[in-house]
Picture (cartoon, helix red, strand yellow):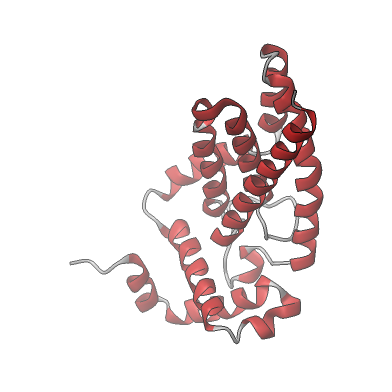
Length: 217
Protein backbone atom coordinates (compact mmCIF):
# COMPACT_ATOMS: atom_id res chain seq x y z
CA UNK A 1 0.00 0.00 0.00
CA UNK A 2 1.30 3.44 -0.92
CA UNK A 3 1.97 5.89 1.88
CA UNK A 4 -0.19 9.04 2.02
CA UNK A 5 1.34 12.00 0.21
CA UNK A 6 2.26 13.95 3.34
CA UNK A 7 3.92 10.90 4.93
CA UNK A 8 5.99 10.30 1.81
CA UNK A 9 6.92 13.96 1.62
CA UNK A 10 8.09 13.98 5.25
CA UNK A 11 10.16 10.82 4.68
CA UNK A 12 11.81 12.06 1.49
CA UNK A 13 12.48 15.68 2.39
CA UNK A 14 12.47 16.13 6.17
CA UNK A 15 15.11 18.88 6.20
CA UNK A 16 13.29 20.81 3.49
CA UNK A 17 10.02 20.64 5.42
CA UNK A 18 11.75 21.65 8.63
CA UNK A 19 13.62 24.63 7.19
CA UNK A 20 10.66 25.71 5.07
CA UNK A 21 8.32 25.53 8.04
CA UNK A 22 10.64 27.65 10.17
CA UNK A 23 10.88 30.36 7.53
CA UNK A 24 7.17 30.08 6.80
CA UNK A 25 6.22 30.68 10.43
CA UNK A 26 8.49 33.70 10.56
CA UNK A 27 6.95 34.98 7.33
CA UNK A 28 3.41 35.08 8.69
CA UNK A 29 3.86 38.41 10.42
CA UNK A 30 7.47 39.43 11.12
CA UNK A 31 6.60 41.91 13.89
CA UNK A 32 4.87 39.20 15.95
CA UNK A 33 6.61 36.03 14.77
CA UNK A 34 8.45 35.37 18.04
CA UNK A 35 5.24 35.37 20.05
CA UNK A 36 3.31 33.36 17.47
CA UNK A 37 5.91 30.59 17.32
CA UNK A 38 5.35 29.85 21.00
CA UNK A 39 1.81 28.73 20.30
CA UNK A 40 1.59 25.07 19.35
CA UNK A 41 -1.77 25.50 17.66
CA UNK A 42 -0.39 28.13 15.32
CA UNK A 43 2.70 26.05 14.65
CA UNK A 44 0.47 23.16 13.60
CA UNK A 45 -1.49 25.50 11.37
CA UNK A 46 1.68 26.72 9.69
CA UNK A 47 2.86 23.13 9.12
CA UNK A 48 -0.49 22.24 7.57
CA UNK A 49 -0.44 25.41 5.46
CA UNK A 50 2.98 24.59 4.08
CA UNK A 51 2.18 20.96 3.35
CA UNK A 52 -1.03 21.86 1.55
CA UNK A 53 0.91 24.28 -0.64
CA UNK A 54 3.53 21.63 -1.41
CA UNK A 55 0.80 19.10 -2.19
CA UNK A 56 -0.63 21.43 -4.82
CA UNK A 57 2.86 22.03 -6.23
CA UNK A 58 3.79 18.32 -6.46
CA UNK A 59 0.47 16.66 -7.27
CA UNK A 60 -0.06 14.49 -10.33
CA UNK A 61 -1.05 16.09 -13.65
CA UNK A 62 0.76 19.23 -12.55
CA UNK A 63 0.86 20.79 -16.03
CA UNK A 64 -2.90 20.41 -16.51
CA UNK A 65 -3.52 22.01 -13.11
CA UNK A 66 -1.28 24.94 -14.04
CA UNK A 67 -3.01 25.49 -17.39
CA UNK A 68 -6.45 25.58 -15.78
CA UNK A 69 -5.17 27.67 -12.86
CA UNK A 70 -3.79 30.34 -15.19
CA UNK A 71 -7.20 30.74 -16.81
CA UNK A 72 -9.07 31.02 -13.51
CA UNK A 73 -6.48 33.35 -12.04
CA UNK A 74 -6.82 35.73 -15.00
CA UNK A 75 -10.61 35.61 -14.70
CA UNK A 76 -10.23 36.96 -11.15
CA UNK A 77 -8.10 39.95 -12.16
CA UNK A 78 -11.09 42.28 -11.77
CA UNK A 79 -12.83 42.46 -15.14
CA UNK A 80 -15.74 40.23 -14.13
CA UNK A 81 -16.24 42.20 -10.90
CA UNK A 82 -16.94 45.27 -13.03
CA UNK A 83 -18.58 43.65 -16.04
CA UNK A 84 -21.20 41.50 -14.29
CA UNK A 85 -22.75 44.23 -12.07
CA UNK A 86 -22.71 46.63 -15.04
CA UNK A 87 -24.50 44.17 -17.31
CA UNK A 88 -27.08 43.37 -14.65
CA UNK A 89 -27.67 47.08 -14.10
CA UNK A 90 -28.42 47.49 -17.82
CA UNK A 91 -30.41 44.29 -18.32
CA UNK A 92 -32.36 43.94 -15.08
CA UNK A 93 -34.02 47.17 -14.04
CA UNK A 94 -35.57 45.54 -10.97
CA UNK A 95 -32.55 44.10 -9.16
CA UNK A 96 -29.60 45.28 -11.25
CA UNK A 97 -29.25 48.87 -9.94
CA UNK A 98 -29.36 47.74 -6.29
CA UNK A 99 -26.77 45.03 -6.94
CA UNK A 100 -24.51 47.51 -8.75
CA UNK A 101 -24.70 50.06 -5.92
CA UNK A 102 -24.17 47.46 -3.18
CA UNK A 103 -21.18 46.03 -5.06
CA UNK A 104 -19.62 49.48 -5.42
CA UNK A 105 -20.13 50.14 -1.71
CA UNK A 106 -18.63 46.78 -0.76
CA UNK A 107 -15.52 47.29 -2.89
CA UNK A 108 -15.11 50.82 -1.51
CA UNK A 109 -14.72 49.18 1.91
CA UNK A 110 -12.97 45.94 0.94
CA UNK A 111 -10.13 47.34 -1.17
CA UNK A 112 -8.74 49.76 1.47
CA UNK A 113 -9.15 47.18 4.24
CA UNK A 114 -7.43 44.53 2.13
CA UNK A 115 -4.55 46.94 1.43
CA UNK A 116 -4.18 47.80 5.13
CA UNK A 117 -4.16 44.14 6.17
CA UNK A 118 -1.67 43.13 3.49
CA UNK A 119 0.78 45.93 4.28
CA UNK A 120 0.39 45.64 8.04
CA UNK A 121 0.92 41.90 8.30
CA UNK A 122 3.56 41.80 5.53
CA UNK A 123 3.45 38.06 5.08
CA UNK A 124 6.00 37.05 2.49
CA UNK A 125 4.87 35.10 -0.54
CA UNK A 126 5.93 31.44 -0.95
CA UNK A 127 8.92 32.12 -3.26
CA UNK A 128 10.38 34.46 -0.66
CA UNK A 129 9.40 32.45 2.40
CA UNK A 130 10.37 28.93 1.28
CA UNK A 131 13.93 27.90 0.30
CA UNK A 132 14.36 26.93 -3.38
CA UNK A 133 10.67 27.53 -4.14
CA UNK A 134 9.64 29.04 -7.48
CA UNK A 135 6.16 30.22 -8.38
CA UNK A 136 4.65 29.75 -11.83
CA UNK A 137 3.82 33.44 -12.19
CA UNK A 138 5.14 36.65 -10.66
CA UNK A 139 2.66 38.35 -8.32
CA UNK A 140 1.81 42.01 -8.82
CA UNK A 141 2.84 42.96 -5.28
CA UNK A 142 5.16 41.66 -2.57
CA UNK A 143 2.94 40.48 0.27
CA UNK A 144 0.66 37.48 0.49
CA UNK A 145 -1.99 37.79 3.24
CA UNK A 146 -4.88 37.96 2.46
CA UNK A 147 -5.50 36.96 -1.17
CA UNK A 148 -6.94 39.93 -3.05
CA UNK A 149 -8.11 37.82 -6.00
CA UNK A 150 -10.02 35.51 -3.67
CA UNK A 151 -11.50 38.34 -1.62
CA UNK A 152 -12.82 40.16 -4.70
CA UNK A 153 -14.22 36.95 -6.21
CA UNK A 154 -16.09 35.93 -3.05
CA UNK A 155 -17.37 39.48 -2.60
CA UNK A 156 -18.96 39.35 -6.05
CA UNK A 157 -20.36 35.86 -5.48
CA UNK A 158 -21.88 36.78 -2.11
CA UNK A 159 -23.58 39.98 -3.24
CA UNK A 160 -24.92 38.41 -6.43
CA UNK A 161 -26.31 35.48 -4.46
CA UNK A 162 -27.97 37.89 -2.03
CA UNK A 163 -29.87 39.44 -4.96
CA UNK A 164 -30.44 36.46 -7.25
CA UNK A 165 -30.48 33.50 -4.89
CA UNK A 166 -29.57 30.04 -6.18
CA UNK A 167 -29.16 31.34 -9.74
CA UNK A 168 -25.89 32.91 -8.64
CA UNK A 169 -24.54 29.94 -6.70
CA UNK A 170 -22.21 28.88 -9.59
CA UNK A 171 -20.27 32.05 -8.82
CA UNK A 172 -19.12 30.39 -5.60
CA UNK A 173 -17.62 27.56 -7.66
CA UNK A 174 -15.84 30.16 -9.78
CA UNK A 175 -14.58 32.12 -6.79
CA UNK A 176 -13.32 28.92 -5.13
CA UNK A 177 -11.49 28.01 -8.33
CA UNK A 178 -9.93 31.49 -8.42
CA UNK A 179 -8.65 31.01 -4.87
CA UNK A 180 -7.27 27.52 -5.52
CA UNK A 181 -5.58 28.75 -8.70
CA UNK A 182 -3.51 31.22 -6.69
CA UNK A 183 -2.13 28.35 -4.59
CA UNK A 184 -1.50 26.15 -7.64
CA UNK A 185 0.45 28.99 -9.25
CA UNK A 186 2.55 29.30 -6.11
CA UNK A 187 1.82 32.92 -5.17
CA UNK A 188 -0.30 32.27 -2.06
CA UNK A 189 -0.49 29.94 0.92
CA UNK A 190 -3.84 28.17 1.50
CA UNK A 191 -4.63 30.29 4.58
CA UNK A 192 -4.28 33.42 2.42
CA UNK A 193 -7.14 32.04 0.36
CA UNK A 194 -9.27 31.26 3.39
CA UNK A 195 -8.71 34.76 4.79
CA UNK A 196 -9.56 36.36 1.45
CA UNK A 197 -12.78 34.35 1.15
CA UNK A 198 -13.90 35.30 4.66
CA UNK A 199 -12.98 38.96 4.14
CA UNK A 200 -14.77 39.28 0.80
CA UNK A 201 -17.88 37.37 1.89
CA UNK A 202 -18.18 39.21 5.20
CA UNK A 203 -17.83 42.69 3.75
CA UNK A 204 -20.23 41.83 0.92
CA UNK A 205 -22.91 40.68 3.34
CA UNK A 206 -22.54 43.72 5.62
CA UNK A 207 -22.43 46.22 2.74
CA UNK A 208 -25.45 44.67 1.03
CA UNK A 209 -27.41 44.59 4.27
CA UNK A 210 -26.61 48.24 5.06
CA UNK A 211 -27.44 49.36 1.52
CA UNK A 212 -30.81 47.60 1.48
CA UNK A 213 -31.68 48.88 4.95
CA UNK A 214 -30.87 52.46 3.91
CA UNK A 215 -32.21 52.65 0.37
CA UNK A 216 -34.62 49.79 -0.27
CA UNK A 217 -38.22 50.87 -0.59
